[in-house]
Amino acid sequence: MHTEILNSVEALLFGSGRPMRLSEIKNTLENTGLVTELSDIKQAINNLEERYLNTSLEVQEVASGFRLQIKQKHSSSLSILWNEKSPRVSKALMETISIIAYKQPVTRGDIEDIRGITVSTRIIRSLLERNWVKVSGHKDVPGRPALYVTTKDFLNDLNLKNISDLPELPETEEVGEKNLLTQAV
View 1 (tube, helix red, strand yellow):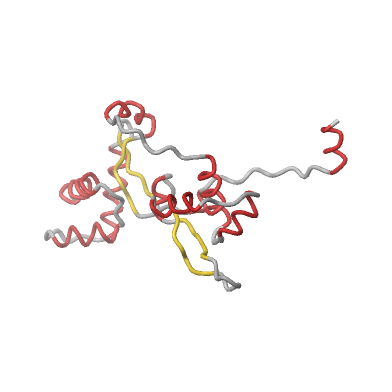
View 2 (spheres, helix red, strand yellow):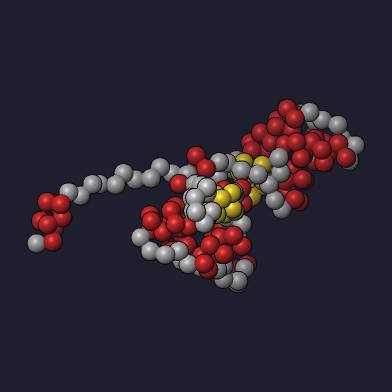
């Protein structure tokens, strides 16, 4: 492995502050005069993963590409550096994003049917502002409600490559009418 390629890829991942695709890394390197192949870049990333095995850093592949980040087990050490309180995520917001993630594309009405209560405009606005969801189109029914899907930013924030990496939903138990009566008594 050419040391210059390895160091350049490492510098790009460190300095970019966001995930980078292999093709984006290749184009950036070529713009600086370093001509390389995608396979060389992938090999450099593999070498970096090995280099960081016993350190506090890791190369993580997420939906938008590769990024250099601090390993999860060290994140608590950094919390004292940032006095800012991150905005709390309400239970309603978590329920809403979960429904969108697992059932996408969904309308607001679909979410309300599943949750059993109305979805606040504030929750939808908050998800849109965080860029965790986007409108992917409109359902072909009266009123043409918006269809919501998750975004790459949502996957990046959860360290996921794609939506299929979400954990499986637990099986729900069907409670018969008879069991419900015995539990009530």
